[in-house]
Image 1: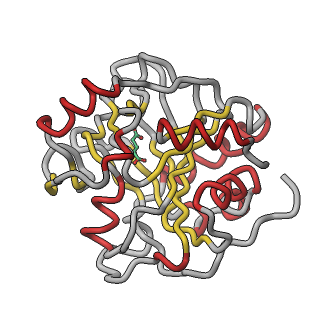
Image 2: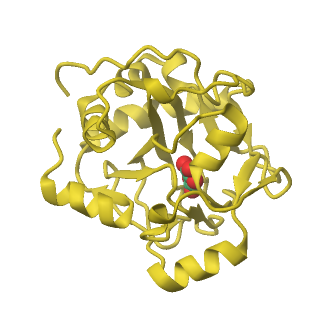
Length: 254
Ligand SMILES: O=C(O)CCC(=O)C(=O)O
């Protein structure tokens, strides 16, 4: 699936791109069907919320399930990533579903992904892309991601490691960083039906609030990074940053 010049310009300007109707209802139903068994496993790949036993994020999915093994090679994800990064050789850095379950799904603090990739994993440059697929209707009510358009253009802001706010350690940006960026660029929360693809880069400042609604907000996320920019420290477990730097090979048809 090739992005148009207009879509590439939108991504370059805003730092994120929303693509409705990329995956069909059947595609999403097939992904959905795999999740109860995966979420039911007691394993280090499944992080549970701080205040409940509910799964917050389930990682390493392409190594745990054949459908997700195919999905990380899907041209609808890999081809746009090669276009945006300008790199043909991308490896699978992280594969997960962020569950944000009804009533219990907790926040993701303000952050940009490169801070964690750099501090924890020694990734040299902010080149990785985060490719999301909405598995539920993402609305204003169930904790959508919130972006600061244009924040990707400022380069990496100061960050600090937050190990207490949620069950997932994250390098976060402070309110003093968020305020001027948001006053300049505003805030945008992309919404959409299941099957929507959302793409954003490593320096995009974003976060999401808790899900107070009765509706789950599950999102599949694939992080692809140029092989030439791979992690250098191998500090975190494989499921948080995979160590197989072989370039992902696109499936021939989607
Ligand atoms: O799932 C969310 O709400 C946030 C996810 C996120 O921040 C990320 O994938 O970097």
